[in-house]
Length: 114
Length: 112
Image 1 (spheres, each protein chain N blue to C red):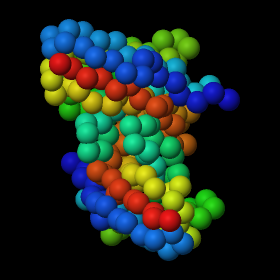
Image 2 (image 1 turned 90 degrees about the vertical axis):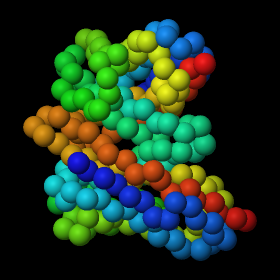
Image 3 (image 1 turned 30 degrees about the vertical axis):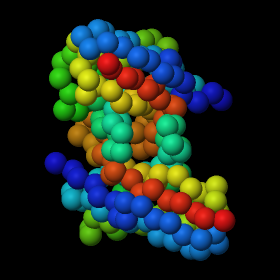
């Protein structure tokens, strides 16, 4: 059974700081990994999708890496801004034939202070 | 292109009642999945529909059921509601699973 853990559970940083969010998973037989952002009481916004054959993906100030063999992914946020405050969720995609599902961690609650 | 839309946004039901939640997938997406997110937890996979057939199910009892229609929109039905069913229900759609999933804003269900 795939289990996904995110560390830290909460993080508070001053504006402008670079930060790293961590995600680990127990079964390395993954199809892909997706990072999401969730604002309070809202749905999920996709940030980055990394296929199992890829090592990293970048979008603007965000960079996500994937080390499948060690069961780890990191989300790097450069020059953080108060608008980055949200919960960040890591989700691992696994597939059996066409049966695909995402297994989520509990998330990291990020607060960026002005 | 429109994203994933869900209705209603909020719902209050009494224990034992039945509820139907609705989802319109993003244009061109033929796969729809449903997730349940309890407060303070990550979303949990309920089931997935591909071309109107269920092709994957998580650890949820049979009173959770669904449908996908020819236009790829979907419904989630929950019978005999329990207090623990109170959660945010998220719908996600995809063209193919390796393209990643787009999520809707969710339906907040409260069972009293």
